[in-house]
Length: 159
Image (cartoon, rainbow, N blue to C red):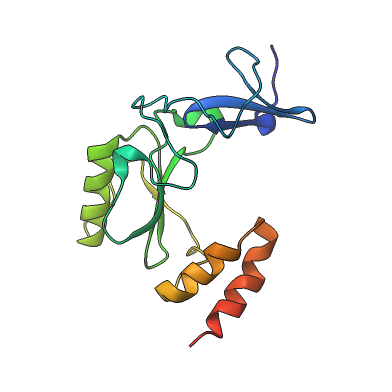
């Protein structure tokens, strides 16, 4: 089966084909039920949408993170995991698991060099410079990616 990689995404490590009829798992062409997703392909844990991945929950000084769910970079031609630190830095990687990701964060916060295969984003994330109150304001109101710039602008006006 010839599939354009632009049609591919992943959901907890499982490759998903995006179509006009909806999203389908690539391995067996069954529809994706985002309310009842498959277990994480990397660790086998149940991942709850909107919550931290169980294998990397409560990373220090981290706003958002995804373990990559065991998916190799080659599967989508991009890194599959990331850590978004409170200060706005984002680190992208593939093939790391819970303890290695926790060590990456600890080492980064201690200003140690990044290990091979980990790449920082060129730009800071949208939450760089926001207080917790401002971040929560944006997060609670965010519906689509197009909303972010306006919401951040509104949040910056909060005292």
